[in-house]
Image 1 (cartoon, one colour):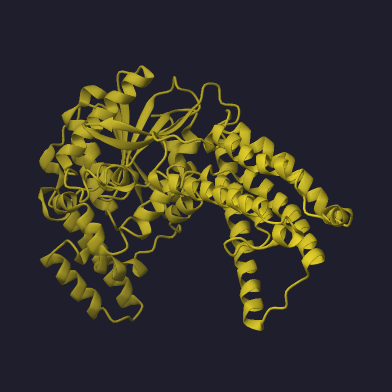
Image 2 (spheres, helix red, strand yellow):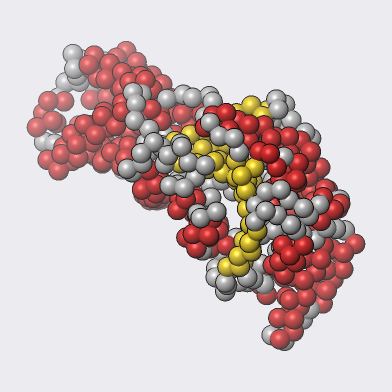
Length: 522
């Protein structure tokens, strides 16, 4: 978003818009000049301002271009919808030029779209703004639409009369108009917030980098986002939780405070998120997503980062499930790591869940609540710590709520970097515990049923790299008490443990500036 550069897509759309209009100037319907004299002056101002803004904006941002390396299939579908609307616009003109060219012909609906000659291009350019995540274009198109569509509705009503429609149709039109206006307002505001956050992060940067792309990691094109205000800064690779829980869209919440300190790389791990959709035809069930393969992918990503930015080592930051990968990779390849940072450290998965259950049960009893269902869920979890985890956590969550509200979802929802594939992964393909488990079966079995479920110490406790831990004081997902015990057991050239007061499992989202201030001096 907001990448300045020539847009050939914008030029194509403008040509599709202007060419038939130029031809039309020699083929106006009789009586049109009389209607022009009666145009509403306010609407005319909106139209002229909108025309200038749209023409300029659609040409100066390269975000509207096709880029298969950076774009997902889902986003390209949005571009396809915009193009289809422009094709309908051309077909509308073909029909008009082949007609008797009366005002009735000019203003007759096309494919059910009223005043199609005005409405179709406005819709096409608005959708193009969605594709480019560009609120400036969306706002400019809205201004244009108010004036342009408004004027032509006025012309149509004067020339051919306003049809008297039955009540249900009138109601449907009003409801449709309300929904349409709400969509325009909501989407423009949403992308406006995203754009403002993006601009604030990079204004005045000396040597910035911002790139969404797919890189080849061991035979799969995998999604990463690279961000920083100076490419000479150290590189930090973020390992998300889950398994299969990409959270790159919300990492800006604390990493924005560190843009002057690091160039950071978020990564959708193999078998999930944007990486999954990119490779769905090759690995539909995520069968290649094993922990050993992910460790090899991290190694390839570290090599990519070092080669690209001229570094010898990278910093690794893991959250939740990502701490398992961070620990294991740090033990395997200390020669490639500057330091390791773990937030919400996984230690003994089963025992940590038991601590969360005990705390929730104690709080429930204090409140005088029935704990029968809670006890049954914990017994089921002990017998099979897989699918049953979701049920157990749904019952413990009301009693394990941290003092500081968890804000990860809010940061993600209003992220400058949230995309369609992110939403697909969260709300469609992971809409049930069964889907979550099946999409990353090998990783989930390793995490919930395998050796790491017992104790992460089995991989070793002697580290050759500095090791730092950050935990929420009230983290009952990966119990802070267990994380601290693990910290006490390890050896490292330098180590420290930071506890964020009042926070739960996502202190980096809930107190982002405090967490960033801890990370910056490392």
